[in-house]
Image (cartoon, rainbow, N blue to C red):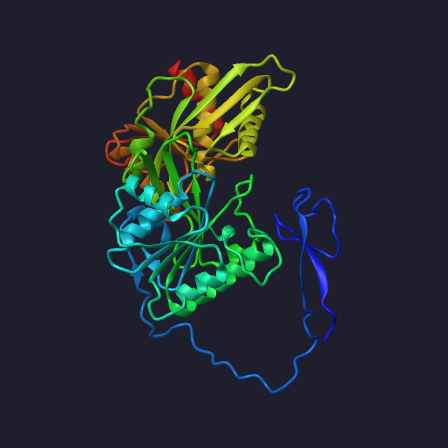
Length: 462
């Protein structure tokens, strides 16, 4: 057996080094490398008897579909794929104060009526959790509450005949294993503690929620292997100064990863938002230059949001580009296309772009709405208040079709919009059409094939 060798690991990204260094070459963090307990070398070969042959089966089987446990919170069930699966592990991450503990305490209280729920807090005392439960109106829920950080104690409490059906660990960075010589929250501790908790969850069949801290870049702190170990990774997004919260799944072994749940933070906790489009547009003012309504899709849910743009003369040698809720590189591309293909020079102006409501948009279908908002602000001509816009822009200035056109148009018609600016070639039911889609109800369709057509629309309106 080879002699165990010491190793050093970065506490931010998990990169391993043979000697200590001041800066991690993988993530660029300073003073984040610490020595961890020595581990034995892997033997070059396996000795002893032969292994047991594994059994192979076909893809098509007679197993019944996995039963799901409803949380009683429809938005969370939507993100999880229709409910919680027994034996699954869910990792919930988000900025400090965004509402992770509030949401999970509400989930625990809802599930306590139909299952045995244990809530273990490593960050707060029992009385602090009780104060939050009183504020949320859930003080009488039969939740088994404890405050503990020792992994050995937690495993001993959960591994027994009276094991709970749902377990919440808040948070995984506070749990430590006493056989590892490193501080709680380090890469080795997080990896070992999560592995043991997940192993027990699979063995006993209970649902495990792990709360994870995030780094300044917004990623879950600790080793990236943590996200591979769990079944579902949920990110809680939003601005703490704003009432809206977005729950997004970035990994889900039991459902889709493009669904989101929308919540509103109130003095009684998080409340579900059944119609996000109406709420995001509630404070919108019509006939304002630089404002455009984008008909987007979040998973299977159509969502209408307001995109605001402001183009102002700049006194700086390098004009500012400020973006909130959208990709700044995508904005630079749209500005370059407007300049090179349409002759609208905005390089000497400050450009500010904002997605109202705190929602972050990632789909390319917002290109046309952003361009319309920019042209509206630059030409001082408002986009019609009853118009929704969506479409992808290519580098040659062409407006490309996007998926799920019908769902976008139906949502717009339901909210009272009268017209839609869409690509000339639109997809319908996955097939490409060579003509504009038909009007959805009272909607009047205005199809554009090139970004020049958008500028022409504003000139005619002017």
